Length: 290
Image (cartoon, rainbow, N blue to C red; front, top):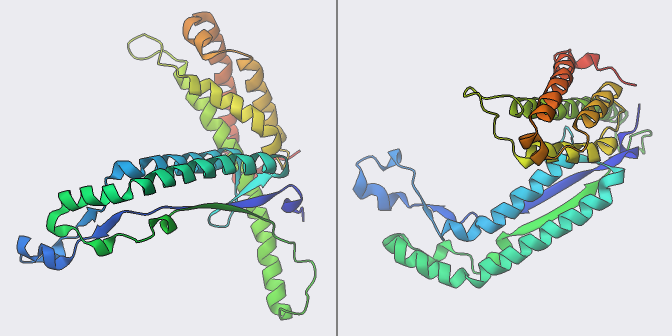
């Protein structure tokens, strides 16, 4: 069995923040209906806008990690190739610093946010709803994890338990392999389909709106693909190389202004899309490797 953890490790990212909502006491709703069980209302404890900067950083960090990693069949974990681990660690540190800066800003305004909530909530305001040390409601952490291949029983597990766990480990590694291959193929296929669609003419006969991200996402994918293709999917590698040749150094501006270039790239990318579509419709168990 090929040891996946010679190629990289798992990353578990954990981000938490104060929800700043609370269910309204059912007794306070009883005057609104004879059947309060039909109501399930919540109240906002602070202006939601105050927490948006934290949410923005958290979402950006999760998005970043999802775009440079590979899926793994354990909840909350993704696989990162070893060549990218240092970069991932540095980027997550930057997101962590930004998150902590936003937390400090929130805490600085916490008392004022409570006073504003007292004004708007009226009788629904309750001091007990507000943490004394709200900073403990926020965290941003990650860890790198390597799972060992169980190649010998140390005597801790009964023989039958050890054999069962070893079999489960082998199945997990195979599932991780299939998920990684399929994920890269689907990601690339989706990008090709999206850019091909953007290069076509709309129902009104005019070119569709073409955003910079349509091309930049390809260049980002090209940059990380050589590391993420840890199982050497040769079919996909050839198509990625073909797409890279087709796009060349074309800029979003040139694709918007140069009709001939736009049409030429669209035609060639449609060929890539057709091949990718055929690959994706094959049964997953028939993935062809180098």
